[in-house]
Length: 139
Image: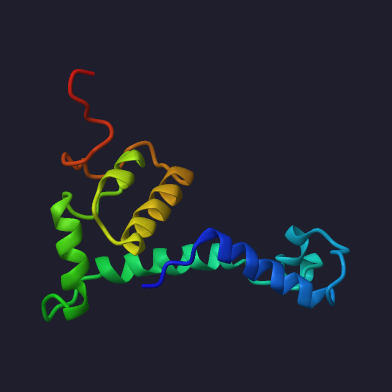
């Protein structure tokens, strides 16, 4: 549940490329080095993308139901999400700045919103009323 700040993420990436190029200037664009070997890359890990993937995988584990009842680790996130209407993925990102919740859970919500906006399916989901950015008072 650790939160990696952006400044550390940049330092980690910089250290990786300093190691690759032996403290010299990059000779190939970094975007190419992230690619697979067949595409001319070195499969260098992009830590920001890895962090997002791990957070999104957490959502999948969280939403997966267990036939024996609620698993003990889910009690804490459930208590945070329940305060704000559950794990809704149709909220306004401005809402994240207003709520009192650990940054780990805020990151999960932010990354899920980013993913959802990349693959929006024109509203073919259940409509969640609480904290829905589509429902506005007086507008």
